[in-house]
Image (cartoon, rainbow, N blue to C red; front, side):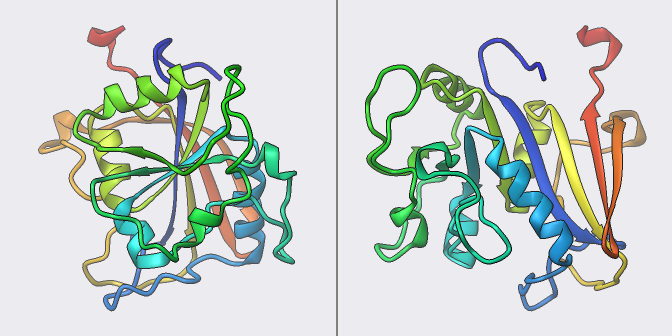
Amino acid sequence: MTSAPNRPFITAKWAQTLDGRAAAADGSSQWITGAEARADVHRRRAAADAILVGTGTVLADDPSLTARTPAGELLVPSQEQPVPVVVGRREIPSGAKLLEHPRLGHPLGTSGTPVAEPIRLTGDDLAADLEHLKALGIHSVFVEGGPTIVSALIRAGLVDEVLVYVAPALLGGPRLALNDIGANSIADIRRLHVTETLQLGADLLIRATTVVPKEER
């Protein structure tokens, strides 16, 4: 697992229908995929140093941002849970679940300083934000979305691998899994290298790494 030396390794994850939708037209999205796929997500969350979402996801879904078992118990101890990271300037509601995250109160990195609250990033300069996370001792980040922040990271060339959980279902409508990623023509297409495909119940996981254009190598 390698990334740019000045930032963490970034994994972007999303779940979608076969026609590329991440939610229904009314915004509901739980659950597109089945229990096996969700359990796989939590196992991969547990291996990351941090979970990153945008404020839109916090406001819409009130996520816990923890790694849990199917029964709802912590998959790894509190001090090993991924650190919650939120990108954006909107306020986090006082009753948000992530404010009670079990990782809070435990040291981060080698400094020994406890994590008192979720790490906040403005999103104004995503590259600088990720450099800040690396400086804090965070070496791997699991990006849970939503589409706005995932698309922005891909557009900026800051994603190292993607995990796409595809449900054999159709939704239609406007709620796409990705927004603008800067590909205005086929010449701008973002090519990926598939490293793993995995059947999870009725769903399919496609794991792929980004391909760096020859001129950037």
